[in-house]
Figure 1 (cartoon, helix red, strand yellow):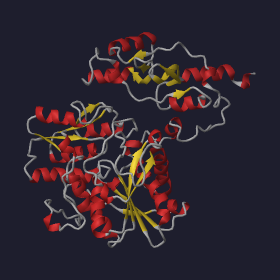
Figure 2 (spheres, rainbow, N blue to C red; figure 1 turned 120 degrees about the vertical axis):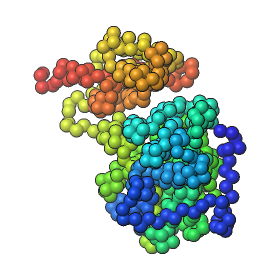
Figure 3 (cartoon, rainbow, N blue to C red; figure 1 turned 180 degrees about the vertical axis):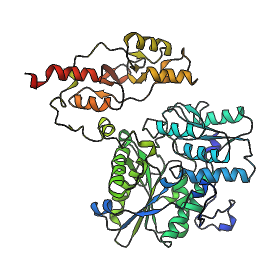
Figure 4 (tube, one colour; figure 1 turned 60 degrees about the vertical axis):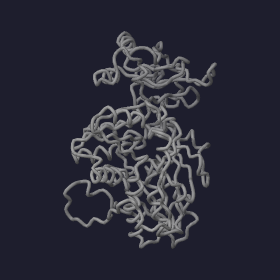
Length: 507
C-alpha cells in the first residue's frame, strides 16, 4: 500500500451540510417480519440494560450494552461486509463471477466470508498466521480460501497483509479488494446504522458511549454521528492492549501514538494506525488489558446472560470506571463487538485461565501432590529441534523416540513454540508446507511453564488438559539478550509415576 493510500481524504465535519455528502445514505430501519436472506438481519441489534454488574460496582447511571455480537456472523463487522459488497455491486466494481479479496486481522474475515457465500462470490481471506482455530474452522465451512501471512511482517510490505492482497489482485482475473482499513463503507455503515439505532432508542440523548477501536470504522462512524446530533455525549475510545503492553500504551488525550495489537491471540505485531480512524471525535482514550476483559466477559455471561467475547469484556471494564462520573439521570452505552464463539477454548475454560496465570491454579480436590514443584519429577532426556531443521528430519526424531510433540528453538536456543506430528502431517497434506521446508513453518503457540515456585504439578496438570505435553523453561541471559531455555517436558505419565512412588498412604 502506497503512503498516499494510508491518509484519509474524507472531508467530514460536524457542521457539514448532509446534502453535500458524496456517499449514498442507507436507511437503517427494518420492519420486515419475514426475511428473504440472513443479511437482512444484520444491524438493528438489541440494546440491553446491565443490572447486577453496575450495581455491584456502585454505578449510579443507567448502563446499556449494544449487542453487536448478535449479528448473524457474530460481530459488528457484518455491517461493513454487507455494505461494502452491496456498494461494490452498485458501482459495478464487483460483478457476478468476480473474486473478493479481503484482508482481516479478526472478525472481518467471517463476516466477509458469510456475505460472499450467500451472494455466491469466491473469496480469499488474507490473515495473520496466528488465526484463532475456531475462526479458521468457520471460514473453511463458509468456503473461504485462507491465505496466511506472518504475524510479525509489516502489513504494507510485499509479504505482509496488504501487500499479499495487492499481489493476489494482480494475479487473479476479475479480483476485487474490499479493505476495511481504507474503505469509507466501514465508518459509513455505523454512521448510517449503529449510531442512528442508538439515538433512536434513547430519543437522541446519550451521555457516554464506550467503543473499542480496531479498524477505526465503528468508533469513527458512531462518533461523527454523535458529534452532529448529540454533541455533549462523551466518546470514550478503547486502546486494546495485552498485559505486557499495558504500561506503555497511551491513555486519555494521547491521540498521536496509539499502539494497536494486531492479533486476537495477543502476539506482538507491528504498530498500525488505521486510516479510517478519526480521532477528533474521541474525547478520551483508555487502555484496557485483555486479561481483565477475559474476566469481565465471564461475569457478563454468569451475571447478565450475555454471551460475548473478550473485546466486549474490555469495553465493560472501561465503562465501569468511566461511568463513575455520571449521575443517576445519565445513560452510558457500551458497544459489545464480539461473541463467545472464537473463545470456547480460551477464557470459557477454567484450565486455560489458570495456565495463562489470569486466575490462581486452585486445588480442586485437596490433592497432596498438587503444590509439589515439577523439579521433583524424574524426567526423561529431552528432544529439541531447531526451527531451521526440515519437517522430515523432525518427524524422524518424533518417530524414533515415539513422542508426539517437540519444543522448537531458534538459532539463539530460545523457545519459540512447539510442533506435533499430526500438525506437521496436516500442513504437508494441505500443501501449506513441503517435507523439506523448515519446521518453523509448522510451529504453533504453546503453554509453557517457567521454572520457579509457581511451577507445580497442579499447573502442569492444567497445562496437560490443553496440550499433549507441558514445556518447562527457564529465563536466561545470552549474548542476544533474554531467552527462554527449554529444560524439560512433562507428560501425564511423569506425574502419575511420581504420585505412585510418593503416595503418603503407602508409607
